[in-house]
Image (cartoon, rainbow, N blue to C red; front, side):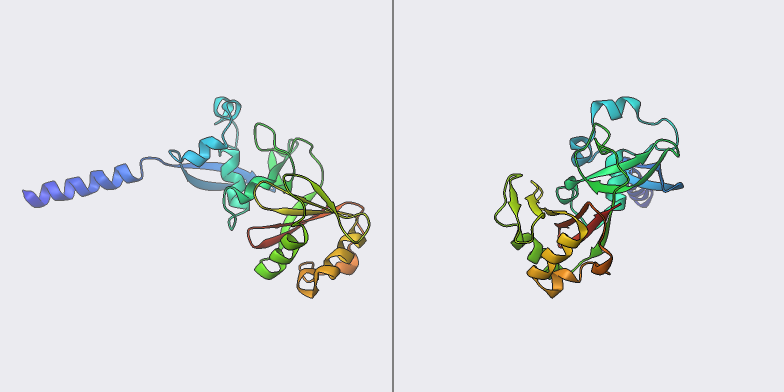
Length: 209
């Protein structure tokens, strides 16, 4: 009898432990993915607007936007990923990626563009070199680098964002050191007019058209 009650308690305890875990779907680059999240997590509601709660659960994208962003940036903390917003394509009803920028109520980028970011290096040395370069900028202040046309801006998350033309960005990274320059797989191809490099959480992200 005691074994029966012990087993019943264990089952009920296990069910209760997973009671707040929910599954949802999100569409990324046209592919539907199923994700899981803890519905009772405080960080979720810190990044969950009333508007999103009210309209949640419709269509194929039933995941909170914050859960989708977590999925796309698995190696960052919630604070570190706050530098990024989601790119959403209404035509395909699908997320196409993320980029550094201002968020709207759904964590989508307030100013949609064709720009996207991708992690190109997870070397802490390279990230620290870029962060050190931008050490003179704080609270959103702008620091003009020795390479004309490049600015370094710090984000509240601790990220440093270098912005400028591709050639100037490559030149700036070369002044920081070979390790920082190596964050880009082919610096010679950086000809895009607007490029940004984001150093956050020990990783480096390259954002381009």
